[in-house]
Length: 108
Length: 205
Image 1 (cartoon, rainbow over the protein chains, first blue to last red):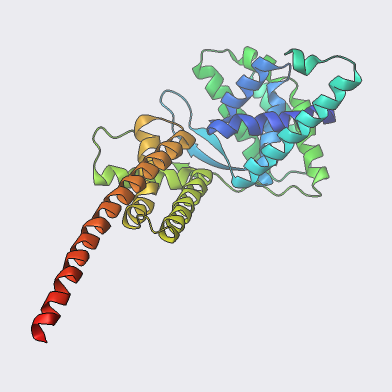
Image 2 (image 1 turned 45 degrees about the vertical axis):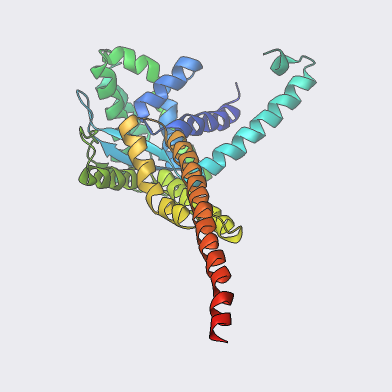
């Protein structure tokens, strides 16, 4: 898959995972890597960039039986970005599935 | 590849980053290795899943170039772990609220929105002449209620919000019913009073 394209989609996935609850880096990378073929190491640059752009805030919390964890928490700006990206994605995926001639999205 | 090798390759490829930035970036991967280790994974397994450290470094460098100069993210706050209190007291409620506000800006904003929603509901109730006191009371206690539900029951914030909102509606409705009954009592008393007055006037004449 095109690297630039994949990066944009991964951003949407990260934002969406955080929509439900705050998560720490390892948790996020494990979930994403289980669902799609990606190197876990490439998630951290995305986390750092989204954090720098103000989509997350972060806090460190002790864990029982592990190292202190850096949790990411979606800001209102991040929630807004997630909603916009998700809408873009659905629109785009719909157009592509029309073009390739199948009702792939509808069948599922 | 092991942890030390992964981190040293990553570090050496992070060109143009200050020492402090490099430390922050490496810190994230250190945490990743420790978390994986705590789950019983070997360093080799973790490295295999992490992929090529040089590729990760390239991504940091590219992101920095895209943004001109990527601003360093603000340092994370250190928050002590929250333990659910065994008993529901005033002190533990305050603790839960303080914690909620500290941890999550988003939850805080939601709580404020909820309060505004109650205030809007209040205006509607006021304009329609329904219950005022029940609504005011609920607007004041809504925020701690949401926090408490969220932390003691482990429900999501959104679900707690819905619970509080609908129970608030019920309370407002009950308040309206009580007030309506009370108005009727008052009106009845006024009616009797008015009925009694002409008789008094006649006596005076």
